[in-house]
Amino acid sequence: MGGRRTTKEELAQLEALNREGMTAKEIAQKLGRSPAAIRNLRYKKHLANKAEDQTKAFFPQRDEISNVMKALQGQKTTLAWELDGLQKEKERLEAIINMQIKLF
Image 1 (tube, rainbow, N blue to C red):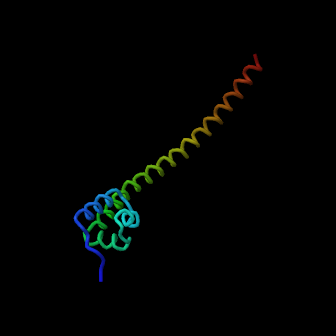
Image 2 (image 1 turned 90 degrees about the vertical axis):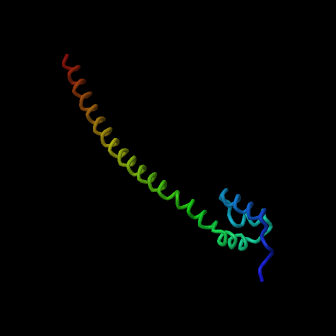
Image 3 (image 1 turned 120 degrees about the vertical axis):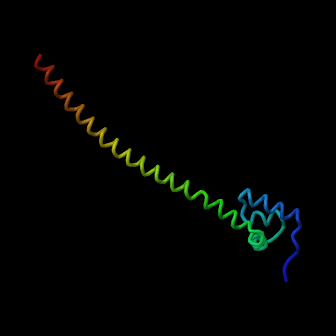
């Protein structure tokens, strides 16, 4: 059972490629191994958890960006209402000015 042993050089390559964010399939092609072998090595060498941790580290940033987007959307809506009110006020004032001009 089992395949060939992993050399120190292959393990170093695996760690480097893993840090680059490559998939098991991509690493397998580079090292001449099967994707399953790469997944197993990642698990055995605790590299899978590191990759997952790096991915999970982006979740708070994603959530923060989402919250900022919601806040900006709210500001956009408020500004649109204010702009609409200002345009109506402008039209009202222009009408008053036009009436004043006609009187002179």
